[in-house]
Image 1 (cartoon, rainbow, N blue to C red):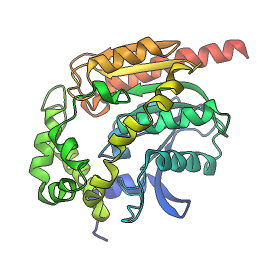
Image 2: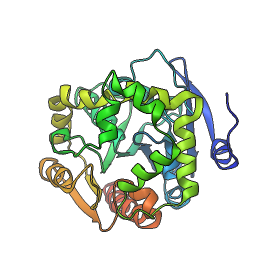
Image 3: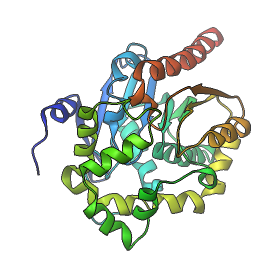
Image 4: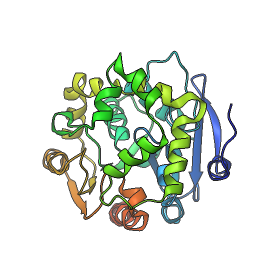
Length: 302
């Protein structure tokens, strides 16, 4: 296994590995364990490091739990594995159970929003051991019919072209395409892009992307199951959106805000598909403001 850069090694030192259903899953926790828990599900094709610049702020108020999905970042990336969103939901629930999480706020970005909706579908059927006080959805294409997929996404989900594409793609290509989905192309540093690329490549991760990309088909196949889980969600939901996102476009955020009961829509002007990386302070403050109002209401009702 290749050695880690200094930056990624520091991130690794922040966390631990838990064995969940026979796989090593990298988990980062921050904050006081007695504080309200905030569970975060990261996006594709990156990993928990997406939230590194927000962690110190969020952990002042919450017990933050992040993990790398199987196939991502520092977690195991088995060659022979389904990488179904359903299994990703199983892993997330396994991590939270191992940490003894019983009640929490749930926050999901991009790919993580589909993992979250599968978890909500199970909750709707009464099969969860964790209860949620709120949900935050950030720049995810649950409404796949409204998404503007990139050429790279379309190629990677192709069973024959996908493996060839990821072998040909290099760091320069990744950086160029990543900057294309930001509100401003210079919103994040070269160093941050290097770390993200390293996490994608670590332990042959780049070669798992075509397998993982089959989740785009699942978004169509399980559309009714997952959208229904949102339409029947009875706790407060925050639709927190980088408004300049060229993939998970404005129409998706507007649709979610309309169909989810008790939903609040917050636009992050000038930010794109990765608002937590583009403006960590603004993004974190929007998260905290929403959750603070919920915690105040819970305290008043106690």
